[in-house]
Amino acid sequence: MKSFVISVLALSACCVVPHSSFAADKARQEAVAERGADVMPFDLDATIHIFTKIRMGGIQQVIVKNASDAAQIGLIRKHLKKIAAQFSKGDFSDPSHIHGTEMPGLAELKTAQPGEIKIHYRQLKKGAEISYMTKNPKLAEALHKWFDAQLADHGKDAMAGHDHSMMHPQ
Image 1 (cartoon, rainbow, N blue to C red):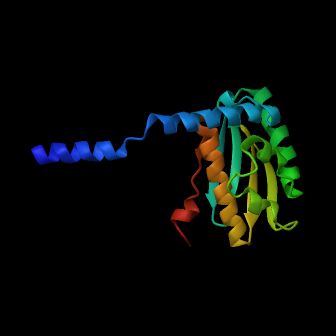
Image 2 (cartoon, rainbow, N blue to C red):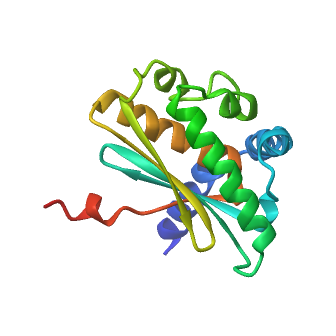
Image 3 (cartoon, rainbow, N blue to C red):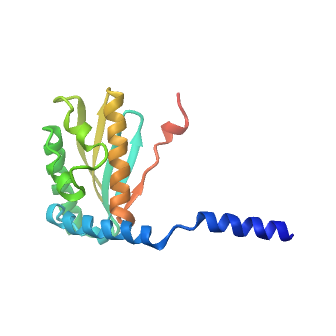
């Protein structure tokens, strides 16, 4: 029993993350939210970003937490439609402003040739989504890194989606 308690204590000690690392993440998330307000017209507290990685791209959704919030739904749709058009032209200035120019995956996405990433906007009942598809494995990897960085930066305002086809290949 004594060795069990010592093992549990040792395991607990090695898994503790210093408080300062949480503070750094929280500070970055607050800065991202502040810069995001310059670009995103909707209320982050009233919405959730969902990032779903798929084999050769991904799907980015923004939906409202309250399905009856028509004003936020309209703002989400307007914003995602605008940035889908920008991204289709290779213009990633909005995420650069929000997340910084060193955001993982962003430099690679900026090098994509026109049409190399198929970007499609679609309305959802509670918001909107942008899908990103490519045949280039390096760009798919860049999209995945970009999604991971957004998940980290948006913190409580974002979540990872789940692509069931990744678990059950055909």
